[in-house]
Length: 352
DNA sequence: AATCTCTGCAACCGCCCGCGA
DNA sequence: TTCGCGGGCGGTTGCAGAGAT
Image 1 (cartoon, chains in turn blue, cyan, red):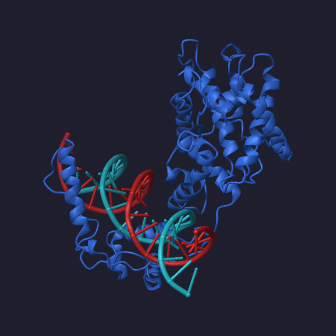
Image 2: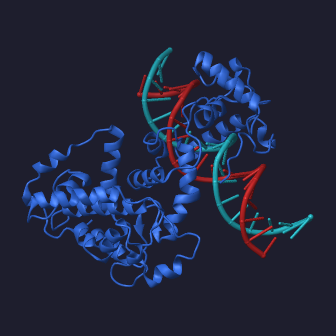
Image 3: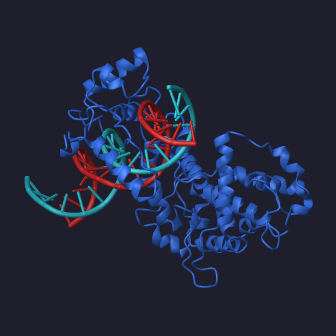
């Protein structure tokens, strides 16, 4: 939409220029004392010596040049000493941010593709606001950029769709015993597992799922249940391109609003559902955990005892279908059915 | 044309953590 | 073990441009 030139922001030599870091340091120490921290002899040193006279606000092209030239020649080395060595009147932290968020040569600029948005939503569902980790999965994108994307676009889209951007679960608007239940702890627990898995870059092979004793599998797989429900049917039709199949009176009225699209959310919902299903499957009747399997393992393993092979195929293809969900920003297939999903989440919550 | 409101995003802020002395 | 430092991260701010009135 807006492709702003670097540093177009109005220069703001704000009045707060006066010794900010020293003030910050003092404030922090005061807070720490107040919170019971052990008092230190010295406060934390400012990130730059002699903060006075340092420039704040938008970067001028000349400053960018100086920074890039210096880093090209010497590498960034110590950020604290860099500004002085590079001839910049900036604090080291500011230089680092400018470099990592804007000047780095490998940064991919321009709007996010649908695929990237999809990945962001998926990863956010698993990792939460861990932008740096999410950014590491999107080459050329910075954590700041992703954070901005989330806050300005994706979050709103989810909200408009009646999906809580924090939990990635549908808001419950219906009455009944499952209304106003907290977010599924099982889902979040599973997400934490996935988070750890991602961070460790450790991938469990699909084969490992074959080792799951069939006694650990449940016959009432909620994901499959919802998959086979109206929601799933709508989803499948939608995935095949049959958009009309998804249109309900609700969607017809709401689709006129400016917030009628969510990119990739379906995938997230599917994965969350799978993860939550896994969590449910991972518990005994009394809610105790039986094993440390990840949701993906459960998902890939299937949970119906009838035919593990068939179910693996079905679940595997379901996962693939979810991942391949057309990224055309249209979530209309879900509209009118979010309560199904909410109820589904509530069912899971009971077990946690 | 002028003014107001909304939105996007670069930059800043403050906290935390790991490392080394 | 303690402390100081450097750096990374997530949250927030506020400017500028676009669209609405």
